[in-house]
Length: 156
Image 1: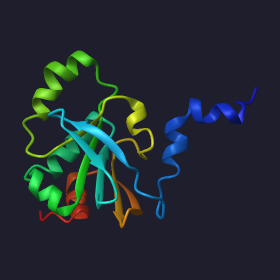
Image 2: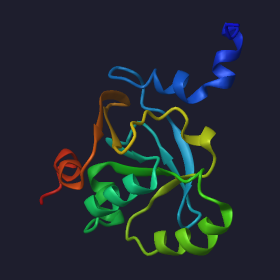
Image 3: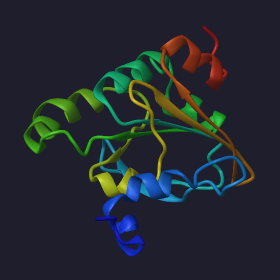
């Protein structure tokens, strides 16, 4: 029995929303809390948005951003979002957040799947969304830290 068209956005919000984030689309406006519970906003001023939805991909991004700070990322218009919705609450609060708080740059955290459902993803890869003037110019999926650093314009 086919799924009624009316139910598709309810049953598959990530698929439906992520499909619309392509070159020419507006950069999504998102307000999330970072690892310090500070509210941060992604908006038209964000030039590069890094997104990770898996633990291994988060490690890749952490390696790529190892020598970065809040100031260096902010000056470059770079923001990082990590979907931690699949992480058990106890693991998040007792293990992951204390480790994240040691990072010298903000990580915006998607604590529910709905908060990051519109962001495109590929297994094992970080998503890099570039924008200019509030419009998306490209969406890339990057599978290693060196390539991510290069795409961000960070010297090796």
